[in-house]
Amino acid sequence: MPSQFKKSYRFAARTALSITLFTTLVLSVFLHYLDGLVWYWLVSFSLIVFSFSFVIIQFNLERFIYKRIKKIYDDLTLLESVNLSEGPITTDLRTLTEEIDRFAKDKKIEIETLRVREEYRKEFIGNVSHELKTPLFTVQGYILTLLDGAADDKEIRKKYLDRASKGIERLGFIIKDLDMITKLEVGDLRLQFEVFDIIELVSQVFEMLEMKANKKDITLAFDRKYSNPVLVRADKERVQQVLANLIVNSVKYGSKNGTTEISIENLIKNKVIVRVTDNGEGIAKEHLPRLFERFYRVDKSGSRKEGGSGLGLSIVKHIIEAHHEKIYVESESGIGSEFSFTLEKAE
Image (cartoon, rainbow, N blue to C red; front, side, top):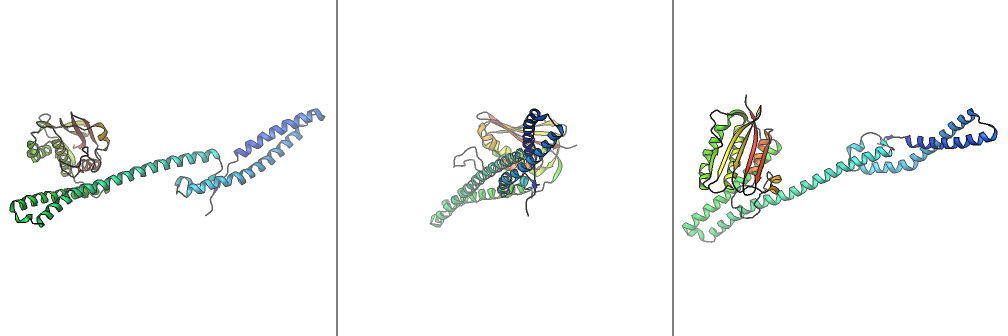
């Protein structure tokens, strides 16, 4: 289907007008000195010169410049630019320049986005490979050792089977978390909203993680005594998972004899904010922007001494965003961290 063209006559009109004014001025001077100025001849001459100049200039403009502009449009529309393919093509150079500038900016943003996504994809694949490879090779090593004859020793057999079991358990955690985060990202995981007391839920999570905290002599506590329930409307199971992940992280990287403190405050009329604060290792500022990325770790060592799937904070972020709420983090290395998120307050 041939392209539609939107013609611009401004250039030809202005040029023709300039030629007409100049020639008319010259003619008026000539007639004045010859036999007097005749106005109707001067007007007629001006109209003839303007019309002739306009037609010639417009014709040449379309013939010589227009073909080049059309080629620019054809080259750009090969890149599937919706903005340039809509509507007629114009010979107005200012309009063309504006469209090309807008097109170039859009493409630059698109290219930058694709580059970031490509880097993220490469990093994600590398992280998945590393996270799965470590426990898999561990399990394989213990099993091969047992097959080579170590199974005859009951003590070694039990110890190696226990370690292999822990490796398989870690693989299970990684796969389970990957499945959950995939469902959260594509919207397949539906939330079951209900009204519940967030104070009671935090107390339940404290009881569940009490033994883990005691191993590092970390105290789990509220910032103050809450005599009245604080009712929120959310998916109770998912919020429990958020609290558990945040508190587990706080205990993992907390200081010995430290404290993990929970506070619940009214934010605005229909929102509460839940804060998880500790006085542990803290996080350097350069890590904060990427903290919620999948498999991103502040500790880049290969030991993974604290275990985990590396997906906990990413899952937390997706769960909170699935509730259409916000999550925040503030931290200073060597002082501690505070993770906070909002929830809808029940009437």
